[in-house]
Amino acid sequence: MNYGGRGKVLENMIETSNRQYSFQNRAVIQKIPTPVKVLNINSRTGKITNAFYEQKSTVDYIGTYKGRAIAFDAKETKIETRFDLSNVKKHQYQYLKSWVQNGGVAFLIIYFKTLDEAYYLPFSLLEEYWQGRLQGGRKSIPYQKIAKKKYKIGSQGLVILDYLEIIDQAFEL
Image (cartoon, rainbow, N blue to C red; front, side, top):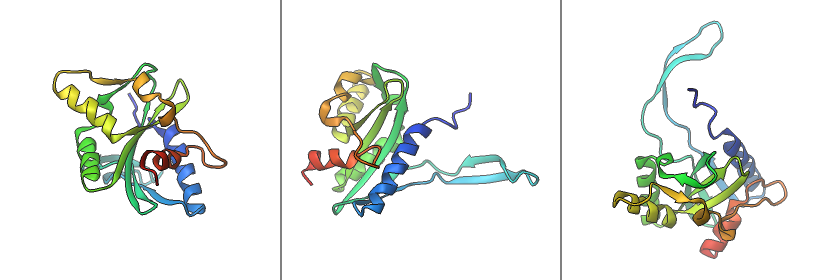
């Protein structure tokens, strides 16, 4: 199974939004590349034929907004009723937790692909379900817990996913 295209719809929406944020001088948010060690390149096509991830990535995006450090990961799901916690790797969770403990703003952007809905998931809600899972609870967050009006990410002009609007409300920035 090819996993290469997973998350591309959401990633493209976020990248477009981040370019607009930068153009409008609202925020500086950058995609963090995953370190890859290239082993072989096809000399005829120039395409990578063999490579591996050198280390675990942190999260997809980091940056600053109104003097606050923000870090988040983008997750897509085709499941309409829940967000499976297995979509978040332990090292990503730990990174976001450390970010919050050090005064930053950490969250997930979850895109329910079949519903065409994007939501801001605050770290506190991820933490609640993550800890619950460790104690034998749910292995997912119900759609109803995520799909709150206050978490729904809308668009504003050329900003396709205006997640900063939700950060403004959540942190009164």
